[in-house]
Length: 511
Image (tube, rainbow, N blue to C red; front, side, top):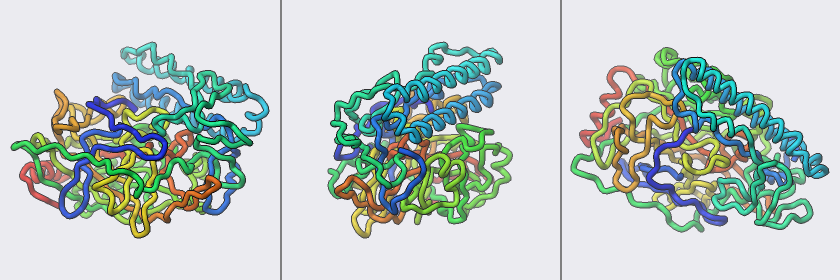
């Protein structure tokens, strides 16, 4: 994933309290997030009911530089080949992490095992794949930054040092060998002060852990006020009703990031709106796809990773790609509400979205990439206008429900419906003023609010979490809350894109 230009990052919380996130609320009796910046063991699958623990090991996960972020100028003729190779890089990391997680005994006996058997071979595979990317680009006359070849080497991360935690204390080692752990003492097979405890019959140790949850009633208010509106503000809203994916339209593809690659996401998506979205879909396919939206002119694809209740349920994908094979386990939860709304800009009128515009918000790899592109927002009903979390899952009080909120980039470069890294053709507006960067135009901002009825997690004295839940993700991301993300492809007919923009510019509330 590439970077968007940022004016600032929302600071992440340390240890006990999760991060604050820039929000503005308003509209129509519902609390809507209108964002202008983003928050910047052995795998035998032995289950212990609805208990979850992390694995016993100093090395928690593998962190590899995200090559795609650096590929900002790939010629169109090379993009399919490059996308396929980028998907190969993801597959290689998944395979390496799976091996890491299934060889804990060997790692305990040989301090060089991770380097010799996992990280070293992974570097060789990545180097060969990056070289194929170079060839693909240069074959069609493109230029390749040779510094990208230095991104082949991966590192290992200790449990309390993953980037999602904000201020991990464990020290990262480049060689994948011994791990220094300044944040906690290694005692009796348990890492005290980190995020991992011994797995004695609990759920497989790829997360989440107790450190990934926080009682929302104990988090200080952190919602920031929205920018002031100018006289030229576009104050209307347009709501589209597309359901909650009750028909279970799922797959583990990602046609934006990995077109033509089956299981390119390595995690399962919910789809609403367009009903023919998979790795092999095209713009023509989208126009023929039909829609779950009440407005049949809205053929847009709205999709996000599923949430699973980790209660020991063997979901239907327990032995499938994206599910159990990629260490995403448990019962898939259907959102009770999936509210999709387009909102305006506090600083200007908006222009209509171009047909087939693609936008990704958030970063599925934020646990290892860092927070530059992270845009996760978790809360509870009754708390949304006070508390938003970025790197923690909320424990909601009785009667309150879990809420995921997304707000997409609201500025467009005026030319491209996508970019090589799927980032640089869109941007966030300035969080203080709502003004788009130079050269960008304001477009209707897509916002989404997903509400779930989740059993209340309970952190127990032994470090387990009863009633744990987590978002699907790449295995090495350890199901961290900060990896939440959302994807969108704008597909409309019958002049709907213009009607959305006109409604918003006139200050109307349309549906």
